[in-house]
Image (cartoon, rainbow, N blue to C red):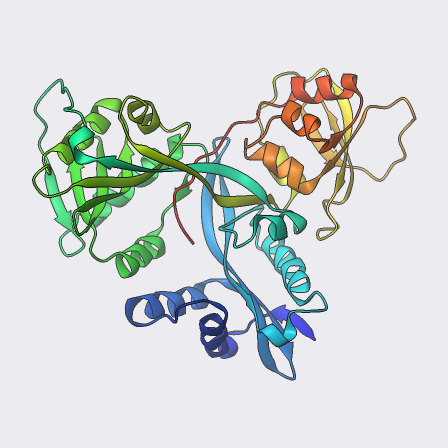
Length: 383
């Protein structure tokens, strides 16, 4: 079995593999979108006698984390033909893919899992709980506004592309975990959700779609709470058109504060998992509360040898070391998936300790907790 990068002249083999491994074949705009991304992504494949039998695509994206812009590998379209689903073929593909991510300076990776348990074994961890909500339009309250807004409505035929794109990335820069959207990503949305509408106000916009008598809120992007209220008020102007409103939020999103006062059905789901690809590059940007502590992180990452081993944290800085440590040194045992859960703010140090996912003394745990200031992320895009 040959595990390597899929070359441009081999991309045509990716379409039949994807179609076989997933429930529905892509046609029309979705197929156009998929082929477009195969040309722009880094894809790792398993080859048997020159035939592609397994693949993993890494989309070149970027994400705002701890006020830094990270190149992010958005993993998608992972599949292996059934007759080759033994012998650890996919594990080999993932290991090679992680190596390529690091070479391309994609130090974090995000995916939508088909199996949380499987990807945990590969080092990814749940990073974000989304809230899928459904509201009866009759229960949606009237919104009190400070002034009468001016609404500008568009679709993809006449949308003010540059203004929307700039506004989105300006807001993303203020959000922890949001993905920046480049031209390619907007092209993807236009191909996959061509029936979208935009409504624009001074400090924000909403992208939405119609599904029968249901109003589908896809994006709510605002610089101010007043802009959010204006766009929610816009929804109420559709009372005669829709019976229900559906959308996605999070525990930490300002919209959820509004929803707590609205009768609605809310379902929590784990849409995303994240992984640290390079420990030193990612942990070095996490805010530090105190620089007086000195301890060691002994990280287990069997797929990434550059992460697997001992790291010294001193004066708020982290570096990999090859030295032996003394018996009385503060050593914290942690897996890459547990560290990823911390980095993306999904779990606290205390929660991971309770789950026996961190092994150390109470004193060591206190030093770890006192040093880093992890923050929960939000991410709403789909790969």
